Structures are given as structure tokens and as C-alpha cells.
Image (cartoon, rainbow, N blue to C red):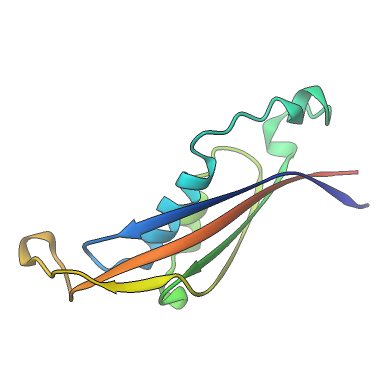
Length: 120
């Protein structure tokens, strides 16, 4: 069975304090889906349950091996979800603030794409 793409959205997320790549990745996914409505899933594709759609997420972030997959995918309210994490994004030098639990002065920037597909 084949798949058809309905939408691809892109987003960016930043963890300015805490140096947590999972936080930056989750924010990038949230940013990608923040202003979407998908009536075509029902009206055009004919799905009856939003969990029938396939949601493929790709995130590029510094320190990808530290990303907690389930925390990133939890941002998505519906769908059969998958996540691919790769090295990318940016590390920008900020200012470490001890009261914010900074480990160092890095700000982590992640980019994400969220693709919604349906089965043929």
C-alpha cells in the first residue's frame, strides 16, 4: 500500500537555558504544528479517526543522542507517529545563569519538519 503526503510543516525551537536538546526539539515540533488545522484529513482523505493519519517527524538538533523520543512525539496530539533525529541545528553562545540550572552558556536550536500522510 502506498502513502500520500497531505502537508509538510517546518518549525524551529530553542532551549536558551538548560541545554536540553529534547526541549529544543519538542519546541521545534510544536512550532511546526502551532497554526494548523487539517480539515482535509476528513473532508478530502476521508479518514474517520485522526489517529489514522501518519505523522512523520524529522528533527535536526545538537547532541541528537540525548533526545528523548517519547517527549518529542508527545507534542503531537494525534496520528501514528515516528521520529527521526539527526545531528544539526545550531549551538549559539549565550550566557549561563546558575539560577536557571545552566550547565554552560550554550543555547540549542533545533529545526523540525512534520509530514502528515495517509495510506492509499
